[in-house]
Image (cartoon, rainbow, N blue to C red; front, side, top):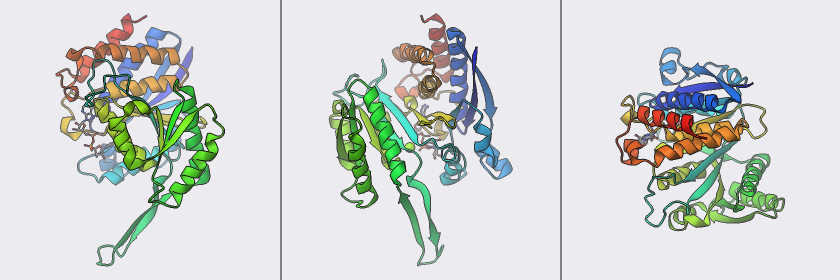
Length: 357
Ligand code: NAI
Ligand code: MG
């Protein structure tokens, strides 16, 4: 039987709560499938680790993760540690060396969930946002000088490389081609940023020629926010830079009902290192330890993980189980206006998996 080795890393805040829930559901899913096995290894890296060791993960952390088939990640962020330390010390310290350059963020309205958009009931909103995940505005290039002096200067330099842009645009075109509508929107800001974003547009037009069956258009990021709200049905696959897609995907998550249901995958498309699967949300200090974190985002990303591993059938079964549960308002957590707990939702998904075809 095939065995997949999964690194399970809850991280901070509600991260461990939702990752534990997903591990439980994944175990039932594998049992139910019968064709593969999942072996989990837990990692305690994160802010508590930082408080003990002064680093978010060991220096060879990314190297240790290389031997796994996939990484299931919760969240990072603690109220008493600056966010740039936790983010760069763990999440980005994993994504960058493992070259997980495509951050894929599906959004649709699951059964039983209400969109804040009045005119949207479900099928009008079914998107995948592809976020460049290795360079751009989050390249880490920049610096500060004259610290604390009146002449202090600080720079964050957005770095875009031709191969970096080509690979993410090509990934997005391929993904668009694999979806029924074969529709791609390339998000840009080349009116105001006249170097890198102009190259981004040029490369999009070049790569588009390789995909004559994909219809594509270009949209300025500011206008894009409006289109997402006013005409969601005109969008399908979307590609944007690291910063732009970071922001647009939180908007997408909110339009689909809650941050608590939005998943993401940090993909290494060449598969020369493991990919990492996580909910979009952060560590949610306000609800940590209360047992009410919505585990649906992590279940959905777990389904993306199964699909990436080649277990499409099991992935579909897990998503169907999740949809059976979201369809019942009694099983909604407080972020969706209900009063169910993480445990109740998890048990319901496991039960739906056991009884599904
Ligand atoms: P957040 O996503 O943690 O929380 C925003 C709001 O959404 C909160 O009211 C929270 O209770 C709610 N929420 C989030 N996930 C939920 C879930 N599964 N179920 C129910 N409600 C949920 O974002 P915030 O407050 O801006 O950041 C908190 C910390 O998380 C910060 O340190 C931040 O840097 C970090 N963060 C980490 C991310 C990651 O690990 N990828 C992503 C976003 C934030
Ligand atoms: Mg974000």
